[in-house]
Amino acid sequence: MASFYIGVDVGGTTIKMGIFSDIGELLEKWEIPTRTEEEGKNILPDIVDSIEEKRAVYGGNILGIGMGIPGPMTDDGVVLKCANFGWGVFNVKNAVADLTGVGNVKVGNDANVAALGEMWKGGGCGYDSIVMVTLGTGCGGGIIYHGKVLTGSKGAGGEIGHIKVEANETETCGCGNKGCLEQYVSAVGIVRMAKKNLREDSCLNQCEEITAKDVFDGAREGDAYCLEIVERFGKYLGTALSDVAHVVDPEAFVIGGGVSAAGQILIDVVEKYYRENAMYALKDTRFHLAKLGNDAGIYGAVRMVLFK
Amino acid sequence: MASFYIGVDVGGTTIKMGIFSDIGELLEKWEIPTRTEEEGKNILPDIVDSIEEKRAVYGGNILGIGMGIPGPMTDDGVVLKCANFGWGVFNVKNAVADLTGVGNVKVGNDANVAALGEMWKGGGCGYDSIVMVTLGTGCGGGIIYHGKVLTGSKGAGGEIGHIKVEANETETCGCGNKGCLEQYVSAVGIVRMAKKNLREDSCLNQCEEITAKDVFDGAREGDAYCLEIVERFGKYLGTALSDVAHVVDPEAFVIGGGVSAAGQILIDVVEKYYRENAMYALKDTRFHLAKLGNDAGIYGAVRMVLFK
Image (tube, rainbow over all chains, first blue to last red):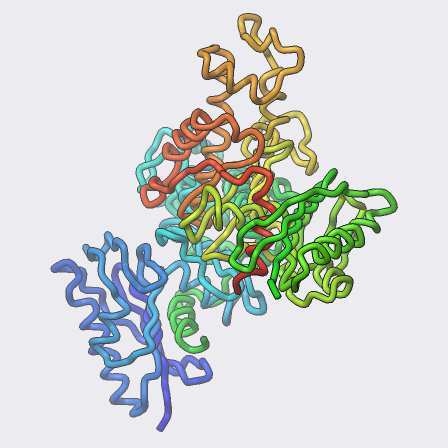
């Protein structure tokens, strides 16, 4: 009888799921809605029902279930706070094991799990230690050191979006502080920078609603104002990543999330400021774009349970 | 026959050594000079001779030799560059094993090894993950994550002294960059800050040669200028350590090196700026003074070989 592994990436609006062969091939992926009402009490049962349906279709054993959750987690699978779902502190790993009867369950923070996925089959393939930066609505980070997720003692390892990069900020970040990296390099942050002091001669004035993509597109076409914003973006992110390198010294940085669709122009400007600020031993750290897109989470989730 | 372990801390002018029992008690410590002439070719033979002398005195087996070296090292014991001694790239671990006939040899970067020592028997005792900051002539860092040294992929893990903290610096750091943390928080850095724009009404004008100790002593006595310098010191170090926490999320920071003799006033000012900049999940990270002084290196060296 064939054996399978399940990867689950629990997001704020949808839950992405995948069924993988026992050598790590993605056989099928699908999504179910995230029912956040009633303090998220349906989320785990919904996932388990969906797994059971697939188990019936594929007719084999499920040897492991990996799961990424958007909140701080301990290495033991205890979620410490999951504001989006109203979840309190509880052991997700044990709950999923009890509901499914599968013993090999692992749960991790979604940014860390995506980093593991990118190292396994994406932009970080071939490396052993990477830092993945996810530039979406926010700015997340995931650190893999010698093949393992660096969770941190309070589940806040790799929370690089809240590194302070600007002493003179007046607006408050979602975390309550001011001047966090996320306020400048996330999709929201780039738009915020672009709208502030927007110059009349910029092509951005023709946009109905400015997006991060518009800013990078404008820069590629030579718009002076967009180029300035992209430089500021690169300076904040490149400098912050040099801080990160002086702490964990990864082999490579992998940059993903919606903003990373900007491509090589983004890598170039980040690398420029990174090298300017990194000490000699760290100047050659490599930079790559992520490759798995929205599938990084399910790949990383399965990677946690597929090999020991 | 009794069994012993040897800890060695190789410094630029002296080599500190200790012989430990098989339950990790320091039985005796001693020093020999570091002969850096002729590209440091006498250093390892001198250490081995000194170990052999003690082996004869104690009349037992040596079960392990741990060693800290002032330079970047890989996890395999290869020194990558040791500017002070003129050493090139070679495997120190294998060289010591060959010269002594002891198989259980481990070698690490001195700042990392000292961190391990402080976690075992010093200011970080009882923790599993710490960041140790050594404020001496320079500013070194050592990271212990889940009981193991975080070396980094190029041996530069924990090189926090070269995190960029000041965009407007005109003087160059030893590493070649400008605005590194070390330029403000090391003993040399504190004195440099104090001498620049020294105010006429400060007690520091009575010092023949200003030291970091004078600055902290002045601050304790209420000298307004010294208090300002101590605030700047705390702001640079506290902010940088909040960056570090957003990457590795340690349970505690342990602050050692000569400057840490300033005591609680130093911890207080660093903690103040740390908490101001750290995100909510990280605000409660603990701060401690180091306890082992110059012995941290030999303790940490032995810790590497005493337990697996």
